[in-house]
Image (cartoon, rainbow, N blue to C red):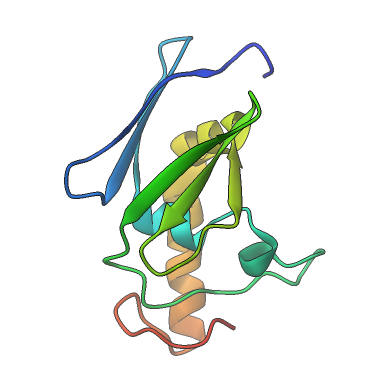
Length: 124
């Protein structure tokens, strides 16, 4: 996978979507909400297996910044203040390929915990 890298990272005008195009021709349209709630940060994923949190109330979150991290990733900042996720090229590719299923699992977790995409509350 190290020979696959993005040729374009483009945030939509409304800041709610990120398009990622790769050098092999793959291109993916990722929602800011999905990027935020599936962030690879320790704040969301925890520090070990089973420690991940479900983050509610992010339906309308927007991307406010993107900063390169070495030549392998980008740090994405969101308008809710979250900016600790380092999104590697392989993770962005994974979200492009399997993000729909991951987001469906996230929505099931929200429902099981009595949370919604619209009401902000403490992640759990």
